[in-house]
Length: 187
Image (tube, rainbow, N blue to C red; front, side, top):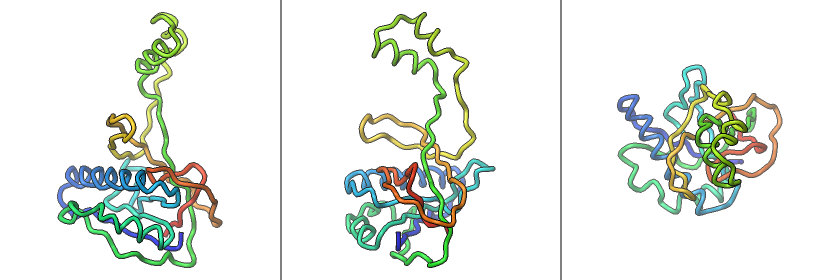
């Protein structure tokens, strides 16, 4: 993680900024999925979890080689009117680290009940008994609306920025640029 790129949404209205951030992130997800390297992480330097917003910037972290490969695909070609990417920059030498990961919330018990009935052949009453409506979870984490490559479904991808750490932790990143174990430099 010796290099990074900042991608900044051009200022419009807050609603439009959020939509543009969703679009940029979705295109980044498509490209990270195609590259399949596991070595590119993402953070949101303007995150404000008290206001449930990720801000207007995406910071893409990785080795210089991985970022050159990512940007050579020209994945931002049609986004230049809406977002600007910095050149590949060197990560500062003295930084903290944090894990930026996805949080999956089981907010729809009815969907889980239908899934249980379909996959395990149980009846509706048994499914409701095993998965009561009271298990619905809510979160106030900021999120991005994305479309799954594998299923084509739109969903909210909730993002949590973990606590600051003085030492980096290793691991791989998903095609969303997020990881449960790998940290990114935070500056």
